Length: 333
Ligand code: AHM
Ligand code: MG
Image (cartoon, rainbow, N blue to C red; front, side):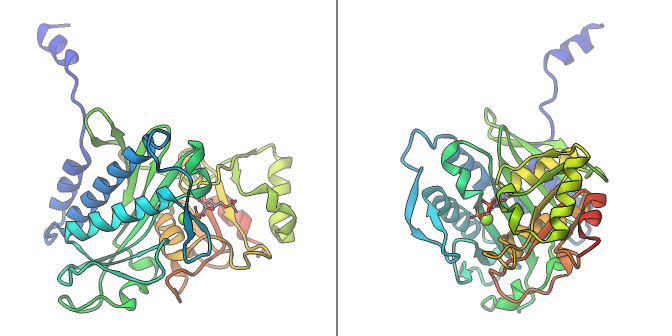
């Protein structure tokens, strides 16, 4: 090894930061004005702050129930509330977003930035049942370009555009490492957070969903409430010796299956006849990512992205992950 090479290996490059990556991508689009890039950076900043609070959760008073229910009637955890405040604040202060919908708020949140071009639908902290037990949780987001005139107050129509109109979507997984994964409709990129530098670094240039897999992820306790079609599918998974894996954190389950090949399902059950998961800020964004990675997402009858949105917090059944598995699972609906 000559001296130049030897000294280079002593100080290897640290990699491409999320900021630099976003700027590089932006310059590939001649008319891009930078607002979407700034918005993605605002989301990453909120993610870093939430990551810090989650990491210290046992040491500061942020675990446990907040003492109120959200609009879905579910008990809010303190960290749900904190994450919601952090994201709303980051998006308001960032200035690129005119309105937000959140799993934690019934109504549209107007940021006061009426000149901004974008609206965001988000689940600030998904996987509530895992918050207090140190198991992976996540943030999910979806971004639209508003259809109402710039300068006016945002409207419901800005959100009700349908999944195919998303301009970007992504998630942050607070797991064994913290990752941000997003798409702007040109493939899927993943970034891993380096705590020591406080930066997300490009770690997965082009995430591709394996076309098939052998992991199935569902709440097995609901088995007897599933339709015959779903039970038959799960039985066949067991007969084939597939692996059952279910964290109960959608982002974590989805991410694992995206990397390894698998399918996540939350079918309708009597107590949740339309399924449990929310279309606007859980299913649309993950469906966008799944499709961009070569996977699929269906409600059993049509692609999730083709569902017509009817209300801000509507639910849908979902079957999402490796293309062949989703197709087999939904073939006999
Ligand atoms: P949440 O938004 O209240 O956290 O609920 C969504 C979560 C998903 O992350 C997870 O996949 C699912 O609910 C688990 O539900 P269940 O406990 O019914 O299996
Ligand atoms: Mg959720």
